[in-house]
Structures are given as C-alpha cells and as structure tokens.
Length: 105
Image 1 (cartoon, rainbow, N blue to C red):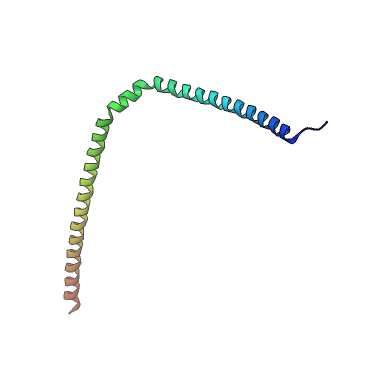
Image 2 (image 1 turned 30 degrees about the vertical axis):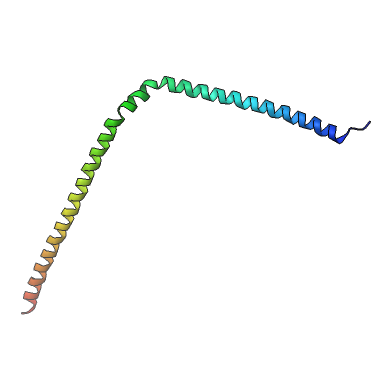
C-alpha cells in the first residue's frame, strides 16, 4: 500500500490549518482577557483620570509660572555676572596702577 504525495501533503496542510486555528483562538482569548483587564482598570480609575484631566489647565499654568520665574532668575544672574566682571576689572586696574606707582621708585 502506497500513500500518494499529494494526499500526504493535503493531510499535513489540514493538520497545520487546525493547529493554526487553535493557536489563533487561544491568542484571541488572551487578547480578550487583556482588553477586559484594561477596561476594568480604566473603570476603576475613572474618577482619578477625570480629576487629573480637569486639573491639567491649572498644572500647565503652574508650569508656565515656574518657567517665567526661572527665566527671570537666569536673566538676573547674567546681569549680576556682568556687574561682577566689571567690578573685578576695575579692581584689577586699580591694583595695576598701585603696583606701577610703587614700582617706579
């Protein structure tokens, strides 16, 4: 008794098709379970999500205020550095004048 190659190929394809269908069904069940958990999680946290979304405008206003204060502080620091540099240059000039005055004698 001989088995025809095309019949063997058809049987293997049928078995692979059944296995693929079973794997697909298992994946769909797991996906359904994950989506159910996500839905439950969203329902459990609905109040927290709503309050967070309502407070988003206040939070963004606070961030804007903090950014403005940081910008002003940076500008003040730059001005202070420039003033300090000018004062140091003045002190260096005075010291060089004093040194040159006493070194001429």
